[in-house]
Image (cartoon, rainbow, N blue to C red; front, side, top):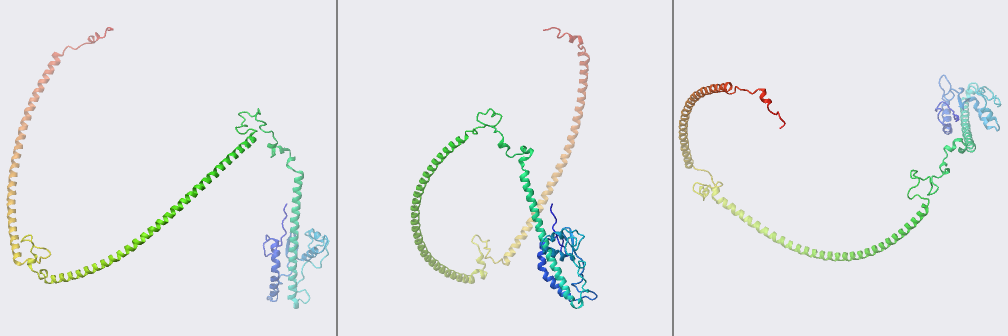
Length: 452
């Protein structure tokens, strides 16, 4: 059973805050609390007492385990813990009904366990701040002493719990060991080691084929066989190691030859590269000189071309100014392909005679076109008249053909009616005269009458 930890609760912190935390905080906040109360104690309120002594006689209660301890009994609690012997135990074991500790055998305390009123003290009017400060210091000392007492009790409770748990564990290890139980053989971890082995020898009759207790390579002589196999494997490994060393030596010798050959090739490559660089350098020098000469030649040629171009431009300008193009000479537009043809980019237009000639030709063309249109109209009218006459002749011919077809159809119908009558007469004659004797059932019964 875990006992509850004794806790003081002064109304400011929660009861769940640990005692050690408040004990540490109480020692740090004691001076500040006392100084603050001392400063406020000098300023009184109208119609009441000072701030620090507002409730000096209020009886606060704290909890020591499950026993309430009043503020009046804190001095007795402090004095009892300070005195040697069993007074501390007697006070702590005192019932809750004895707040002053009289039933616990402690000396009686004067008064009712409370501080007297501040007004009842002698010289309270003159020394009220000093008395209030003294009471506050006394209460602070009591609080610190109670915190220390609770810490001691907490340590004692922990130590008693540890001793009890240790005694319980020793009793279990001494008198309640697992092998002393009746059902220990059912849960014994060494049961398989104590049991008879599944195979005593390679020729054990219990090791049948269906028992699955003996397989290839699991004989009892497997240890010696394994040792021989390990020795053989070691010899094989030594041989392989020796072969590997020989192979490494051969590889090292081959690598040395390869490195030497590669160094020779590298030296040759360096020599070839040096010769190539020298050749490239000579080629570059020659190319540079040739390019310089070529650049000078190109510059001089361009200078000559530019001079020639300027002279040509001047001559062309002079020719254009003095030529037939700008002077509008009609002869300069004449083409060499014929008299009626001109050069388009040189032709400046036609004169009035040429325009009049063109208009006369256009008028003649218009008259000729009108004449041709009239002739075409007359020719089309003649063709239309001929088509109408031919269409009328075709209609008359079609009507004549229809009349002939009707006559021919009528003749054919008469002929067909006559032939039909003749066929009916002939069929009646065949049915009545020719086919008058029909075979009876007796005629058919004469067939299939024998086995042949």
